[in-house]
Image 1 (cartoon, one colour):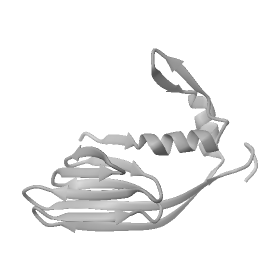
Image 2 (cartoon, one colour):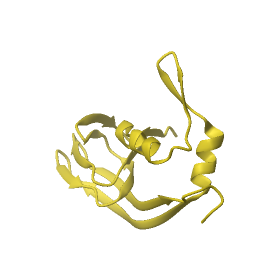
Image 3 (cartoon, rainbow, N blue to C red):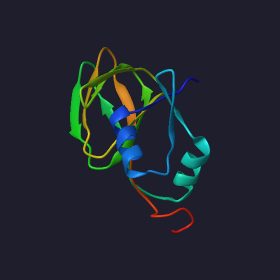
Image 4 (cartoon, helix red, strand yellow):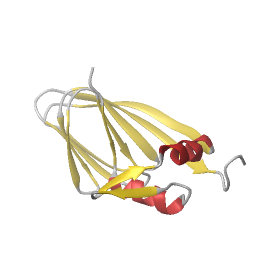
Amino acid sequence: MIIVIEYHHNELQRDLLLNNRLSMLSNGGEEIVNWEEYIQMWDNASIQLVDIRQLVISSRGKQQYLLPANVFIYVVQGQGTIWLDGDIHIFERFYLLHAGKGSSISIEVGQGDVTYYYILYRGSMSAKPGHH
């Protein structure tokens, strides 16, 4: 089984601006995360599961949404294209994508049905590490 995880770049930038505890280093143009600080940051996070939905799009179908919460989209059957805030993502079975609250998403499928799950959640960070 192969799982592809994509973290939408604008969502990452927003997280970095909101959470100054996350250190970014530059290495030849690539961004490198200080994983110890990143793990500490998420250790102080509060996550609330909002909803899990199984959806099916029929062959050659299309769905569009404005996301009400942060979401993981997990494709379990089929293939097609996702447009996330204008960025294109080609997907197939076992594809996993993260998108932030308020993102615009459009899913278009080719031949064959697509079955996927929306895992909607809300998250917040503590003001300081160690304080919940």
